[in-house]
Image (cartoon, rainbow, N blue to C red):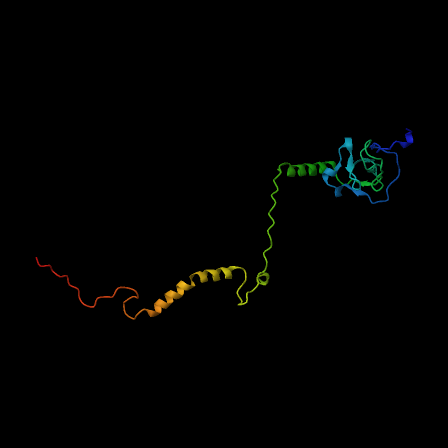
Length: 200
């Protein structure tokens, strides 16, 4: 296999570069980034490239024109060598001091350090109740105007089962005399009943 057919991988990102090329894009201010997206420690001055999302060294921090070094989008030595055209050689405006960056980083850690993971409880989806007009439109009407949802039929069947007994009671009530004598009861004696004494 020839050397020309070997797939090139991303090159290591050196903290210092001799390239004098400067991107035409406006300078990237560190204050526009979050504290965890850049590092101002002298040993590893770097930031997350806003275009490709990889950590990239900042060169020339002590000069008038610090900038992002030329870099590939993938991991050095593992991913394909795809150059980040937008983020490479872009000027950086260092408008945050190391002390202010550390304070922001510590404050953010203090706010999120005590948080605990909570179990997400999904609320059950409740069907939207229909409007009154929609309910009325869904109920079909019978021939006599009664709602046809089944309750009318149940009432009709119950009435049919007791109709004869009710009409019989109504008929007997109409035949009851005006006095105190109830219909079907033994006659009330009109004379005073006296017990007879037996002769010995």
